[in-house]
Image 1 (cartoon, rainbow, N blue to C red):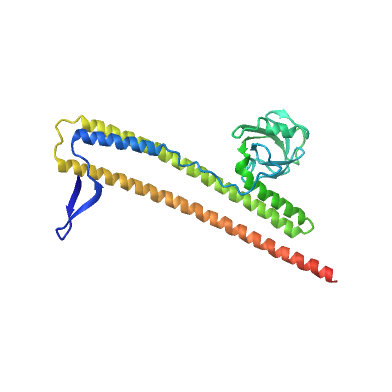
Image 2 (cartoon, rainbow, N blue to C red):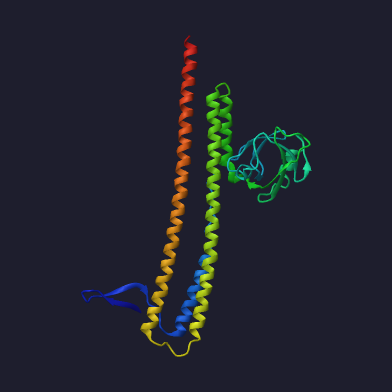
Length: 302
């Protein structure tokens, strides 16, 4: 059955909305079926996605899990950008790890203690001291969650490239500083991306909960409608009620979509700004490298 309306010229046009049977029993049955379909769609997983891995896992990361910390003895030498330690903002390069999961460690035992059972998603407790602290000072306690190594293979390879480049630039202070700036900016970008992803997950989960509540509310209305006296009542009045409910639902959905669009635009603008900063740093690094080559060539000519 279709709903039809006349335009100004008297020509009948079919509306885009499907007609629902006005029979109370049929309407209740169809509404319950729609609610069940909505709940199935709402509870589907829309957040999981396989990440593209461009590089194989490097020699420093042969395990299944990692905290994203590169060690020199018990000292934190580098933080893997996008890794648990870097994202936490609680671990600093140069700090010394004194305990792992409450057990004292040294250069010989720290690797096995950090790895433990090598299971992604498990907790890792670190007790740290910075380079200026005395051995008897209170430790800084940090709790991390091990990440799957395969998800950080790209970041690991990029860090190895930058560390190698920094080693090559040891004699050039400006070039070494630019590499350091690249690593810092890259880390800020990854932290911002991680924060954005967490915000998306939070918003989607909130939408799930709200949608489930709305569906349950709709079910309650349908049950109450089924208990009303009489058989059908005024068909036109019932159709108008259905259309009003649809309009209200679509309006609320549109408002929600506008809010999500605005949040996404703000996040994209922030990402563009960070990428512009990175491009500027890379440009300066290329210029410094070119200057270094010219100086080397000049010395060779002399």
